[in-house]
Length: 469
Image: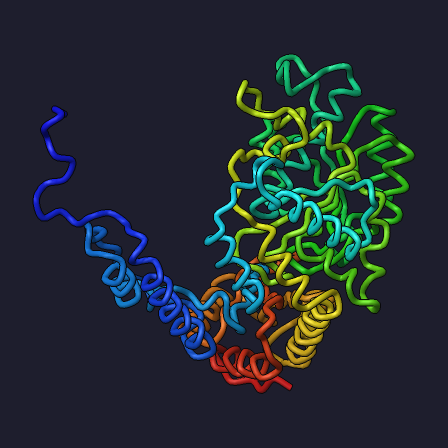
């Protein structure tokens, strides 16, 4: 480009200006209010939409209006009260406000210097660690979700395990390194993904026996396998809230066993760790303080916007050995960028900090207790129905059930009718060898009335009418 050549052709739309900022925020607020206000009524499963070429240079107001008109009707109501798929929370008012401010403040939480954001993240980690009953030695850092949290935890465990064999895998890699067994009962799919990313391989994951009629790891099976290793390093993955049924491994027994045999204990408590907040449920996570690493997802039961999770570990030095970023312009101190796969990270702590400050431990505990009560209510109705069979007791927030006389095709047909009905969303699974359906409760805005609506939608979707008690 010559010095005389203009950067923009005549008539081109100018770039952003400070003058348009307030108007853009006001327009975004108006569109957000419209969407959030529609959540109780809008179809939970959105209709399909054809995505067109992005308009080029039409201005902020027109861009927001175009999206609201063209695409917002095809967004799911996943932040709403009857989205029971996976384990999906919503955004409380305080968390939403915190997230908007996080975008406005736009802090890169990679360094300690120059901003209080990293210190707020550390304090949020410490506060939640106390809530969950973790050990003061557990060092926590924000990541994007439970999948990344499991990845960081297993990367730390990998570093620890090979160090026991005299091998620094972060520096020397895995060539000629012996396999490290990873032992679990019914692990989340993200564990296999993490093992693939880390070069350990999915085949190192050994699925041990679970207790009869449950998805919880059988401690006797674990002890036999650890004893057979004769002191060789191993990684044990325990579930605090198994994803199909919400079951819990016996963390007290498993923690004592891993200490005795010298194995690493990772606890995947993505949503189940919140049981610690409710006295009647807290015994399910007794023993988590002895874990070597812990996963917890905040965009589930804390109901902060995507994406937000924590990973805690007793071996932060091993974590930093893996994720250390070395360059003359980067600090080699305790900056957060050396503790996760990301260098640049948004101010994820602010929505969580805002929620903790606004609602406190008791407020979040009330959300958890309410979700458990609603899950039990749906479970009781399913168990009393001639059309359905409850496949496991409702141990926390997940209702796992099946058509009493139906195969996978019948289940899928029912779920398709449920999606077309639009009032509620549930997901398919396979549990205890049966084609099954999962309903997971974790949204702050779900009411008892929403449970009644879900039951009515299930009845309407049945191939024949069967009243649910």
